[in-house]
Image 1: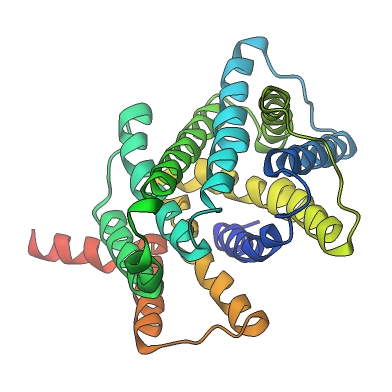
Image 2: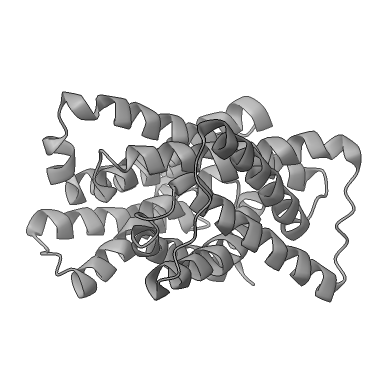
Length: 298
């Protein structure tokens, strides 16, 4: 699949996953739901690799990095975000998670010796500004009692960013995305299992159609497929550019909220969406207007 197709699929699936996560909260402990999600996703990916003849044999020296990817990307960040969600609105969580674009840029420089492209910085600036406009009511209403939850969300985002960087490292060493994700998700589920046993979380199951349906969606589409498309982008266009999808997918969530929950659009929200789309074009363009302007004036 070409880069634009991977990007669009990632945005659409993860934009829809916010609504699916809503149906996971309630009967089953969050960490247990996440275990179910990544065990199922790992099984699906193992089956996919087996059918396609993709080897799951990876040199033992790389398993430390696969385990660390599993811990950062499929364990710690989800635990922190789910607990933060009890105190913060989904919109504010989306704003905080969009900071992964900035974190990926600087973590890419720090750990992968990547350079920062001027158009990436400009695109991120547009995107974060647009997100601020769209979700300003949630931001302005967060009081001192939400500071701990905000801190957890920032740590969760940083953990996800480290997972992105480790995935990029794995791909640079020739490890394919599908087997790496299958093994990484299994490691993540093991870390989550250890945490759940330590916390004394009950292993329950909710048989309502809303829970089972959302679990299947999150396991198959939001995990097995979307993490594959996203981490392929990380390897293809770099973590700093791939992460811009996290700025755009909350707009899909808003569109679904308009249809399902009656979200009311305002001029501020519309202006924010326009800024996000402009930033998206700047980041994805092969020869962005910023680069052309610099060359003309340089």
